[in-house]
Amino acid sequence: MKSPGQQVSGASRLISALLLTVPVILVLLACHQGIALDWDAVVCLSAADSFAETGKLIDLHGRELTTFAPGLPTLVGVLLKTGAGFNAIGITINVIAVATTVVGTYVVARDVLESALLSWIAVALVSLSVSTVRVFVYLKTEAPFSALVMVTLAL
Image 1: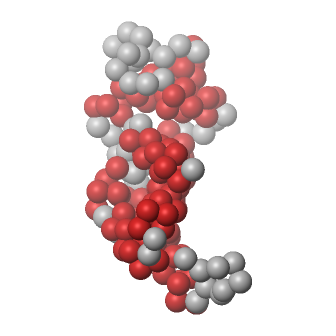
Image 2 (image 1 turned 90 degrees about the horizontal axis):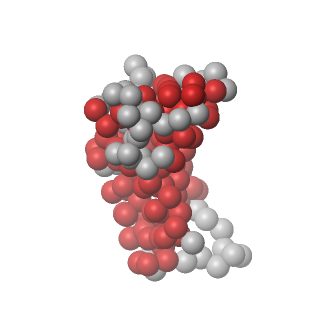
């Protein structure tokens, strides 16, 4: 690790910018027609819509939401009340989450591996992974959970 007085090379800045920007761009491209949906996402988003309208987390079957933790549907419901749409909310949450996950990966790798090269390799594996894009195109709990785990580990 460099001491505070040492300068970071231009190549290192470029690599870090690319490794942070590429997954964000990939998520944005993957969501250009809207966030991805599967059954879990539909249940979660129906509860968010219900929360925005009634203040209660009710799923699409009219039952209280018990399948998922209430945090994400509540957050999305509050944001829906501001007039934002599901896609804008989902894309914003996921872009913030993927960026946080990538930065967190670097911080944790730097502390654990104690090697700049190995840290950049770890970040590249996360940033350029197809699985990363797959996780961060759905508005489900996995994306914010991944980001929060990395923040927790980094602290």
